Amino acid sequence: MPWVKCKEWVCIKREPIWGTEVTHNRMCKILDTCFSTGIQNMAPKDGSMVTRYALPDHISPKADLDGTQLMTGDYITGTKGHYMPRESFLYLRKYERMIEKITPPTPIHLLDHIIIPINIRKSHWFLAHINLQTRGISLLDSSQFYSAASYPQQKMLIWKFFRMVWTTHVSAVAPGPYWNIPLGRFIRCRRLTNLTPKMTQTLRNGQQIAISSIMEVTNDHIRTRWNRRGIRPELAGTQATDHPGQNWTELERPGTPQQNNFTNTKETRLACGIYTVLSALYAVRNWKIDFVLQAHISQARNWMAAIQGGSGR
Image (cartoon, rainbow, N blue to C red; front, side):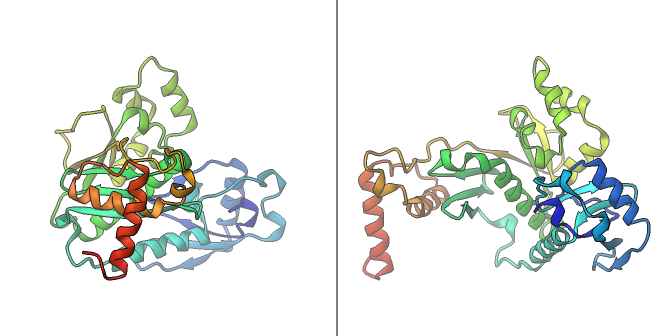
């Protein structure tokens, strides 16, 4: 949402684990002033200190903030605490309560696979595959060119969901998962790692990105946040052995068939539903991808129609 529409704000004493800190000096000064006086207390169930303030019209953000967008979970750190639009705060609380209420028939750490459907721009579907047997996460996307720009955000949301469910329901009986992210991808996942643009630029200007160089440009506060989120930078192809918890990796799936790689794209360009169903079936059975021909899409449609009609087996 645009900053100029953020009238009601909250101040949180405890830093949001899954929030993203953003910097804006003028807005920070406004909020510091506002939360110094005239605040209303809120009472979350977890007992954390939260205060609420509605910005008067005469001190609302003006034109210099127009066009700047806040994403859900963004917050500003000031002298009184961590400031967040009330709408975003309530959404995060709702998300946390939803996670708490989830009661899967089988505990999550005893599952073999988790399949998560993802929608992009209200027009395309693909899958995230969490393989609990191999401790790998992959995106099964039949239109990578269309979706690639959203991958960093989707990966963050997938890991956020998985880590929160695990922490809430499984942490007492099984060690928490840690996502080992290759160094090149680690510095690109800024919303997950909270690396600042200056930190990222410093790392890219170096001769080689190494774990030691990442540690040099960050501080204890950022690294503590990584630990709370269950992420850490790792060399590609390695598995950490000196850290507690389960080690997870992101798996590349370059073999996912692309629905626009055919001569008759009219038949396949809207076939993401077919691809998501087939990708899920093949992933959980560890089958080799073989639905790569144009005719396979028509055959899959007929097969699904037959099953839906009750005549298939």
